[in-house]
Length: 266
Image (cartoon, rainbow, N blue to C red; front, side, top):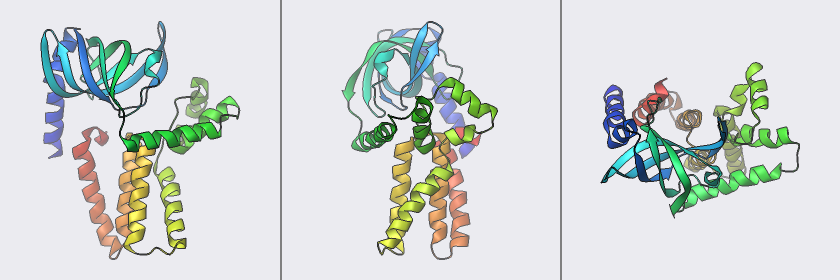
């Protein structure tokens, strides 16, 4: 089943109109949903802002297509304020992508036109992330960048030299959100819930809400999804007959994750 889903997904990306127009480097207008937080990087001719976009409508070469294709957008500083989950319209030129998870690259012309704001849960998560950054805004630059990265994976302000230091010392995993972060958050919520007198299934509900909130806060990166799924398996194992139910939940979790995102296999 996973092999079939992977083949169909790759075929959809490789043979769709987005890939075809990218091979021709066509100028297009697209409507899509922002799927990642904008990130500023240093390009050959100045600073670029990168973000992933799930294209839902494509206009190019005189035709309009309804699609569901992921593209990587290369924009300017106007893209930095674009929120995850926002629906936008943008014009630009498509180009081929090397990454098999992408249908094309899009060099945007000008700022995005916001069609619809993000859903309330994405806005709430963004507000919490902003409050974490604000809490350390008065600290030295390295500390100011490290705390959001360690807490929720928000490494947008991390200096490249500091990231290299972590790489050299083998501590890069600290900058990626993982099961440790999830354990601290959900464990704290469960302790508070028990202190408040909650027991049984109410504890499982609190844990599940904590996991969902953590995913919204830390974004749907692969390490976050893996941590969330393992946290869910642990919740199953907390109940009666936990040893057997936990092992079964682990098997289901692996299969479901690979069906949803086959790329997690590697």
